[in-house]
Length: 472
Figure 1: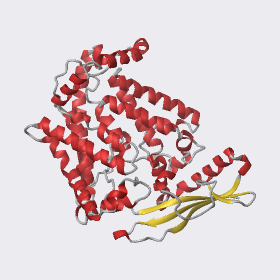
Figure 2: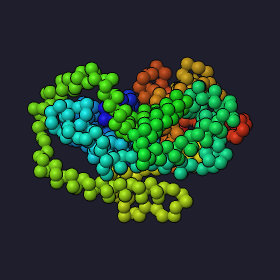
Figure 3: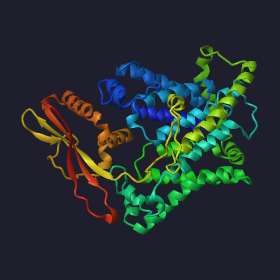
Figure 4: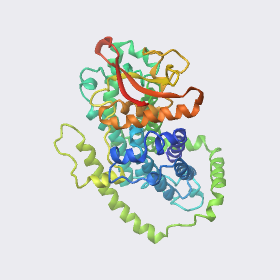
């Protein structure tokens, strides 16, 4: 799980790096002034907010990538787990407009991993006696309970927030696959079969509701945890191949590796016995220059003290997060006290697993960036070589370069996010003119063609909505 999570951290950073200026600099669509005024919590902590220069952001990204690489090889695992969590928390707080549920799960998995001994196998530390490398094969403590409960919240917590479309009408997946913004072409196979869609909706709902029970079976627990892992992997693979959800499906699978039972990991060790030395030698080679730089090692007496402190903190945090998730359930009348919110927001333990809940988002549609040049030419920035048209010319899924832009567009059309609109319009106009000096535009209109999803395959006439206009 450590290797997989670290790999996803590096992959996520690499994907975000393509939009470094757009999402993390003051010359992009989310400058610090806009974030602090409209999308900031006073308890947030973020190293990324020290500067709006993309060059500074690039250096911060490089440091975060370095921390993730050290976590990958298991070098000073406790230290770099903490640093990787700090850097991920900082990154998420800098621009939460483009975040989705997978980001929350990755951040929270990394948080609980700070209390887990996941540097004791397949790591540099395990061959240099830096961490406890004589751990028993089975570990049962408050840290593992916190981890199992966190995975449970993602599924059961999500199911408890879902409404009639999921557990009564069973029409939820019909509406999900109606969304051209996220539905892959393969989903049309299911979309055209209404009865099958209802069955799949019911399976998805009851899977989420009950799969965490397999974590806690009092007998043959290892077997049931293996079954749970197989089910969860299949669930996420199906979602990953049918809807556009970015890295969520990979994060969902990887974050669950920790529930695998001992006998499954023993089997893994046997089939990878010849590869393990190669892994370790590679890790040692990467970490060799660093052993002269990072020499800090906690003393045994300090370890004994911190273990007691960690246990006390863990017990409190387990109860705290359980209470927070319980308060999300609409049928329960109590809500988190204002006095505890600073802790939740500063550590980003705040969470609500309302994926497509209580109902599926139905405002489907596509964007048109209507540009006018100084010579009077009209065209769409998304299709600059084609004649301007307001009709749907292609699957809107492919109009977004990645899931971050898809999430940004999803928030862009919301009335309570209208503060985003001017920054985006001016950014698109500026970047176009910089790249196309021979075809500069003087005005730009950001248009959304809203196509609201109707029940029973009914046609919905698209509505033209001008979200923002900028330029002369």
